[in-house]
Image 1 (cartoon, rainbow, N blue to C red):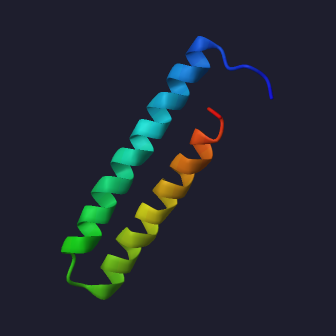
Image 2 (cartoon, helix red, strand yellow; image 1 turned 60 degrees about the horizontal axis):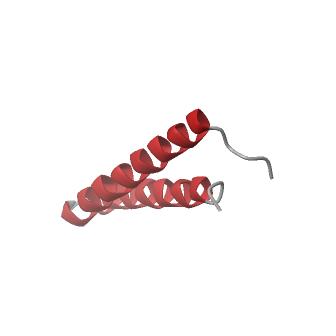
Image 3 (cartoon, rainbow, N blue to C red; image 1 turned 180 degrees about the horizontal axis):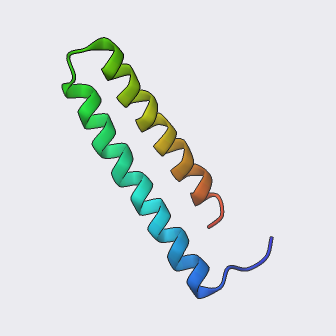
Length: 61
């Protein structure tokens, strides 16, 4: 795998942070939601944000 330059590393860190924030917020919304369909939608979106964060983190390894 090629080395990341400084700008790519900064962008990657920003994306990872954004996906972590989205995961936390969506997960909290899902926990507070009463409607099962909306709750499921928030939970699926939270899971997708978490999975994307993990994929992005693999570029750091």
